[in-house]
Length: 112
Image (cartoon, rainbow, N blue to C red; front, side, top):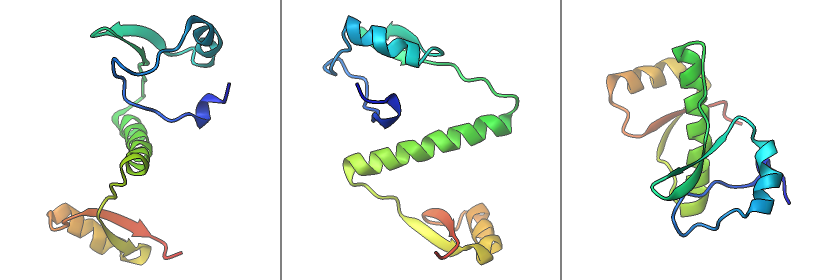
């Protein structure tokens, strides 16, 4: 069986392939903080994450969102539309974003 870190996430659906008991016995110890539960007739894994403050929670959420966005783009071919600014123009990019004038996602780059 491959490493869990090399697996890709897919949406939980009633017709998704099921993990059998033997696979569950092997996989469950690899994710000890996760709970197996059933919602709307579908078995799911769930984990609650705790953070010391809002900034840590927001940072975690943004990192998870970035991974999800990449996965979504790979699976669907949909690409985000970006306004790209060199790092030297960070103040201009920030002001554009705060003013609401940015039409697309504002991205900073080092130019490499």
